Structures are given as C-alpha cells and as structure tokens.
Length: 601
Image 1 (cartoon, one colour):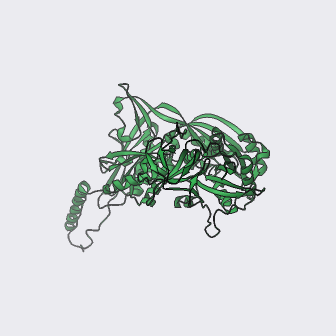
Image 2 (cartoon, rainbow, N blue to C red):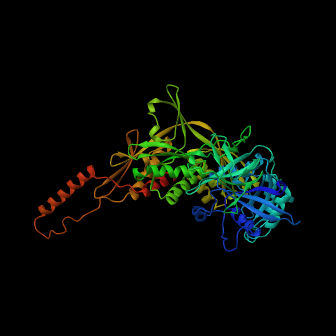
Image 3 (cartoon, rainbow, N blue to C red):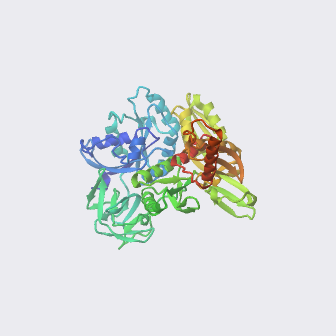
C-alpha cells in the first residue's frame, strides 16, 4: 500500500478511562474482527489483564478503514496501559507512532497520568487528538472536563471530540480525524533497511517474535537481516501484521508496523530498541532506540524447591523478552538457596511478574520484602549501592546514608486535600505546593522518599479520595537519611526473606506490625514458635505462636495426681526437644502478611 495511505497512532490515557473499550469499537467499525470471534477487551489477551480490568502490555493491530471519500487507509493502532508502573510500555508505543488519541473520562476529568502521557507524546512530536469519553454516563460533566483539557493540557476546545466508546458514539469521527490530522509515516523505501524493535514475545514452536516499525527500506521474507546492537545475522522466516492475530504477508513496507520471525531460539539474543537492518547492505547507523530504564523497586525471587532454579531462569528470560523494564541477576542466600535479585518499576509491576510466573510457568516462589536502592558512603570514602538487607554494611563502617526521593504530583478532589496532606506527612513527605485547577479539583505536589511511595501509597490515595485521586511521580535525587536493618528471627533463626531496610524512626512500629502479622499467619506446630524482630542483635519486638495442645491425660481416670504430672513433664520435655530440632513451616501467605503489615506503617 502507498505510504501516504498509512497512519500509525496509539491510544493514551489515565487508568480506567476507556482505552481498551475504544480499541474494541475501532476493531468492530472497521470489521477487523469477525462478530463470532469478538469479545470485550479483545486486545488484552492475558488472563491477568482481563481479571484486573487493566492493560499491562501494549498491543498492536492493523485496521483497514474506508474514509468518507471512498479511499482505503491502513491504520496501525497500538493500545497502551494507563497505570504509572507501565509508563515504559507507553513510551515504547509512542516511539512507533505519528499520532496519539488522548482519552479523558467525562466524569473523572484530567488526572495525573493523563498529563504525564501527554508530555511523553509531545516529546516525540506526536499529533494529539483529544477525546472526552463516557459522555453517556449520568454524572458526565462535559463542559467542566472540556475546560480542564483547555486549561491544564493547553488544547483548543474546538479540537475536542465527544465520544462514548461503550455505545459507539463519536468513534467514526475519531477515525476520520486520524486520517485527516495524523501525518503519514516518513522515511524512504529506497534507503537501506532500518526497523525499530519496539516489543517481542516468545513462541515455543517458532522462537522469538520481534514486533517492528519499519522506518526506512522494507523487510521481505527470505532476506538476511542484521541486529545492529549484537551484530548477529539471521534469515527472515516469516513476515506479518496483526489483525489482531498474526497474519502472514510477503513484506513490510516503509512506515508499516508488524512482526518478523527469524528462528531465534534464545530470548536473550533480542534487545528491545535495537535496529534491524539488511545484512548485505546495512544502514550506516542504528535508530535512536529507547533510553535505559532504571528499576525503582527490588526484591529477591527464589524457587520453593532448589531443583526448579533452571526452570525459573528460563521463565524469567522469556518474561524479560516481552517486558524489558524487568531486570534480574543471580543471587544466593544461605537459607533460601539460589535465586534472583529482580528490579521492577513499581509494586504493581512486581505483583504482575510474580502472578505471571505462577500462572504461565507454574512456579512456586518465595518473594522477599521489596526494597529501593540506597547509597551508602563508607568512612573509607567508598560509595556503594544497596538494594538488599544482606549487603547492608555494619553501622560502624558508615559515614553517610542516602535514600532516593521522588516528586509526587497528585490531582485530587479539593474536599480530600486535608486527609491527603496528612497521608503525605505520615510518609515523611516535604510539601512543595498546591494549585487549584477548578473549584473542586486541586493539584498537590510533594517530595517523598521512594521507599514510602512504592508499597501502598497509590492504594491509600485512591481510598482516601474515593477513587477520584491520582498520582504520577518522577525521580528527583538522593538525600541524607538514617537507616537500620530490621531482621526477623523465627525460633532464633534469621529469615533473610523477611529482613528489610527501614528508616530508623519507623523501625519499632514496623517490627511490632510484622511480628503480630507473622504470629497470625504461621500455622500452629507441636511446639511453641518465637517470632522476634531485631536491629543489630537487639530484640525490639516479640510474639509467640502457641503450640498445638494435646490432652495427654485424657485416658487417666481418677487415681494419684503424680501419674498425670509424669505425663505432663514428659510432654513438656518432648516439646522442648522438638523446639530445638523441629523445622518451622513458613507458608507463602506469611511472607505476604509481613509485606502487608509493613505497608500499613
């Protein structure tokens, strides 16, 4: 197809503003999906996405749309996530497009991720098409939301399209506007091949499937291609587009979005952001690609059984292929064996990876307490980065401790402002400023320690604001602080999976919360179990899990009391011996209970 008849666009918005529903309507109106095969959230093909009602992975699909003048257009759509933890997925999608449909909920209005995603799109010089969605809702306030878009986002009112993705209202108008305003892709099909790998997946039979946007030249089946980051050369076995299921074609032309399969059997050989070029007449330089993403949250992931280590490594390699913001490296622990230290963009991202390992690869896992990266300057002048309590040096060796801070931008109802300020203060936040966007909508900015934000800040903010509050955050810098390592001991044995680095002020409260939570979560054994929290060998909190009671004198009817006493003494000695030799079974629920308890402090 002629390049001037191609359009590439993505849908961006805050979480739950109707991106996936709008994508569904696009597929129906253009007849891309057969009526018998259609289902809601059709581009969300992971069970997790459908259960949670959120988009986790960006999805690509090719639409054939007949414009009102009768001309046929190829429109490549990329649906994106809305949660702050998946911003990297949005940035990858934006790099493959020329336009963005910015969706705003008619009842919720402009929220934090709306603004963040808009700035991402502007940075890449995308044409912005603003859409007010859900105009069919009873509490829709179109006039108010239009004013917010004009005032906050700086978009002209006449450009706003009113739509209801659920009912199909205004959807055809959006498609017409995409044809009219989004430019056709640039590039030159006569230049050497340059194709950007913006995503990938793994198929057990066909190997790595690379999702590409062809910038210059064209890819044809059977040609030899070179990965510019690694220098590896492969033969293209299959070329195709997404409809939304993969559909094989003979070639991908300049400006098109699709996939290639080159019989690559190892996930680690493909890099997101790499440039594919012709092996015989390669391009002079690679495309800019993506900036390196630095994970914000770290935790240890270990297999429950050491024999599953290799299976876990293979599973992580395949997950990393489809999610390049997830990183991991080998780690060993005396009590947990061999596992991985993993980095994530946030706690939801961590939960999703854990769930995918459980479901897609049937892995039984032990997850350690999440942590951020702290900077420690020793008295010798050496600076080290610590993301694991095991690596935390002795206090006597430390000169300065520093923790990461973020700038949190919250958009919330004015009536909730007092409670939100209290929440931020309790999280050791530093107030920056307030801006009243509307009579009932306020933007509040705080500087907060990242360690206080990652665990439950988003959930608490949503709860306080009855679902109307939103937050976006960006990394600021490292600041001086006072930290301690909180160790958890079960029957005198340190449990590395439960250890954490905490701020000195909150150590006692967190120790109490964790020990109480573990007392409830650890099942009763035949002997008493002590649960202790310690800082540097000093016990600061303790709870006991009582032993299971057994009525050893049940068969004694009357007679001398000394016989009963002998049985009681024998039972007491047996329990003491079991306490020394018996192994405490700590279920995965106990680790989760400890994590939840930490988040409530």
